[in-house]
Image (cartoon, one colour):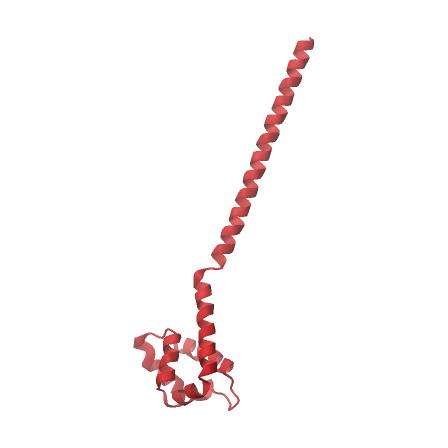
Length: 135
């Protein structure tokens, strides 16, 4: 009887250890999977495209800030080297550049709403007009 009790106890302990190791393995796998999922979600939400777009916006704002008076002059007549450079920075297709130049001339008062229009306001107004014109 004693051997039977010892055998049952050993079997129960072995089963308990085995089951607890299975539970640990499952928990570890779930933790690893959840961590991997979170990492994937993070990297997919901060794509290179988003970074590139933000980089272009910064470059455009700096260009407009540095060349504001020249851009005002070019936009008033719808042509000029500063306006052409801005079109390139904005990635305006060659086929759409004439439309872009005309837009700046024809909508000059929407771009420069007052003599106190700032470079930041110009960029905001220009983005709005370009989007509406679907350039």
